[in-house]
Image 1 (cartoon, rainbow, N blue to C red):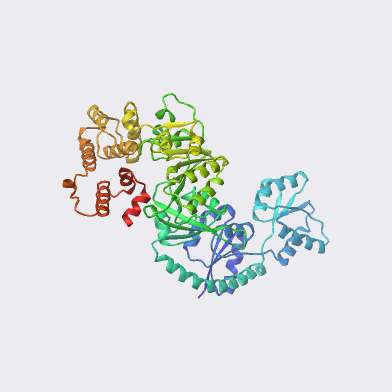
Image 2 (cartoon, rainbow, N blue to C red; image 1 turned 135 degrees about the vertical axis):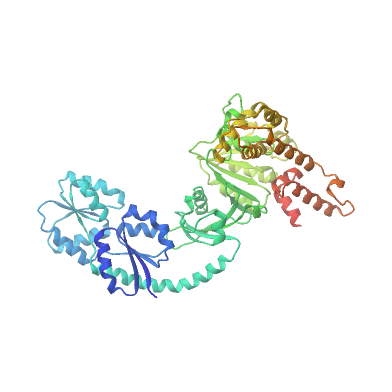
Amino acid sequence: MSIKTLVVAPYAGLAELTNILKAELEEFDITVIQGDLSEVLPQIDSFHLQGYDLIISRGGTATLLSKHSYLPVIDIQVSGFDILRMLTLVKGFQAPVEMIGFRNVIEGIISGSNLMDMDISYTVIHHQDEVDQALQAAKSKGVKVIVGDNITVKKATGYGMQGVLITSGPESVKAAFTQAKQIYKISQTYKVKNQAFETLLSTMETGYAIVDQEGTVKYANQAFRDLLKLKESQSNLFRSYSYLQKLLVNLGQGITLDHQMMMVDQEGQFALTGDEIPMESDLKVYYLKARPAAQAADADIHFGYSAGLNHTFPPLIMTQAVYSKEKASYTLPMAVYGKEGAGRRLFVLGSLMDHSKTMVEIKIFKSAEASFRALLALISICNEDQILYISGAENLTLTAQEEFAITLEKVAAKTVFSFLEDPVFMLEQTQIDKKLYNFFKKQIVYIAPLHERRADLEEYIRAFLISFNEKYGKQIVGVRPEVIEALHDHSWANNLFELKDVMEQFVQHTSSEYIDTNVLPILYGLQQNQKNKGSLDPELTGLNLNQTLDHIEKDIIQIVLEQEGMNQSHAANRLGINRSTLWRKLKG
């Protein structure tokens, strides 16, 4: 079986030489492409799809490929023959000559020039970005000829200097293929084991992945790719989920995520746990385990990342003016409170965030020692460019709340607490610790439910109309007065989320320029469902009261779940319990 090899040649001569040598390299199935640093990177995903066993390249291009590809990359080394040929060539130049390159190449040339009794000036660079500065300095000294690699020689032309490329001869190329053969034999031993593990992982419903610090996916089973909607050709996680870079940074800082503390994505589709994998090298590698967010209900704590305004709601609905006619200037730390769906989170995103900040959202469902310690570790490493948005603090014990407040006082990030009830009332009911309350008491903001903001209702309707026109390609210009009147009369039990859903359905079912009364059955149907949901009359629900209290409780939970469309969050909110308690009762 031949070794399928990709040769990435930074210059045309190397591609030509490799093609000539193909006949001698019978053990290899060789594909040659020509491209420099800038041309190679966009093609890496396609390289992985074509089934190559390894890659051979040279210089900076080889270095770049090794950082972004999980395939073995062999660098064609500059040999003594290469140096001797180049020095013989430039020896005849009467014009001043200078070498610009990395130390490993420069040192070999210096040794060769000393043997040949040549005096050539040189500049050692440590990064490709230093080339321009070195060329400018050389030109100012009157240098006419530059010796270097492909990038250096190309740029030298732009400065009006003659470039001499240090080319690779057949000896160097053959040596690289010899090394490739050895690496291939070693890798095949591990490949059998890897295939066995991959086959096992591919059958699992839980998603697994190994990712490096650059976001390159070293391995991902199909369940992971399906949950995160990653194409087979996509090898970098950050391209779709840039905020996961912050997660990997946190893992690298010692945060461990397990079944008690999970990261949930912005859309609430999946939950992640993970940790850093200890490596002997400086390269940081992490494992990630993904599952549907619905299966993470048993976790003590959820957290995630948001950055400024998003497309979930129109910007108008997420601005300070919507919530405060006085346009007060807010100070942090603070607390916001209001009914579910009133817009507490939107208020923070729209009024307190800017493009330079990231919001770390933390939802606390229950208080366990291990998850609480993990939470303290997480907030301790948050910086001044982050806002902590914390809901469910009342689910911590009073002792834990006090320790939480002491830790927050030392944290650089600003904090916003979110509650469903007035924190003053919760303090009186001993649901909130006094020290925690004192932490935010100077700024407490009430987010009124939608039925208390009816004067703003038409403004919200227009904002949603514009948003859904764009989403569905409609050109609806307004809403008929009869429909506006019906919307004003509606109770809006689920606040902004309910208005969003209603307006989306209205737009979807409208084909003319105006939303007309023909859509009102959608609203009336919603009202009837809410009336039905509000009733637990045994005769209407078929509830059997001739059984134990535990069985009656389970039946009631099941009825409420069905009435809420099996939405556990809505059912828990209606029953006055949190999701983790609901999950335990269902499981029990």
